[in-house]
Length: 208
Ligand SMILES: C[S@@+](CC[C@H](N)C(=O)[O-])C[C@H]1O[C@@H](n2cnc3c(N)ncnc32)[C@H](O)[C@@H]1O
Image 1: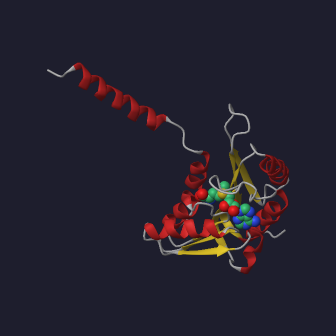
Image 2: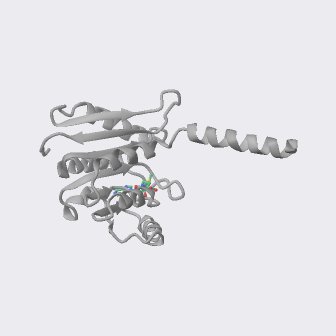
Image 3: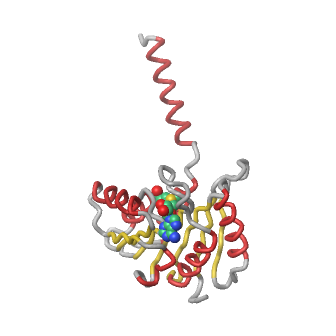
């Protein structure tokens, strides 16, 4: 006969497994899902803010016969990302220690990209993406994006600079002609200042 302790443990595990299946993904994971649906395994994809390399790694795995480019202004981010990729045996990458506003010097057309804005959670919080450069970089990124390509932007309005970026981006994407781009916003409705994502799909060739 099964002892009560064992039975309770088993039941607890079942509940845990069911609940963990129900629990919501992190917002950036939805951005990954969108990107994954839009790319082929030989596409060029770009992580415009490498940070700890989690987005770079996901992107690299989506395009085993293509290539992921990663940008960051911090050497620490580049090193962490490189380590992460190498640990997984990933070789289809190029990491660039430069601001994403200079992307034109390194990349041409690409199929999908992500800006995960803000600062390195474990690093110097004063080194953060900024409203003015983010706007410029997003415009360049939309120029270089292939038709039917996806640009995902993860926005963090919960800190001062992030709030400014959020206001700028809301205004900017609202003004985009819907013949040129489709813009979708995925946000958490019952949490104040929660991070959210903008997904932009390019419909036809356009330059700003
Ligand atoms: C929230 S973190 C990115 C998280 C990251 N994608 C990950 O998977 O861990 C934001 C990163 O943007 C970088 N950053 C800030 N300004 C930048 C710029 N002008 N060009 C490129 N990267 C920048 C920061 O150094 C920081 O590492």
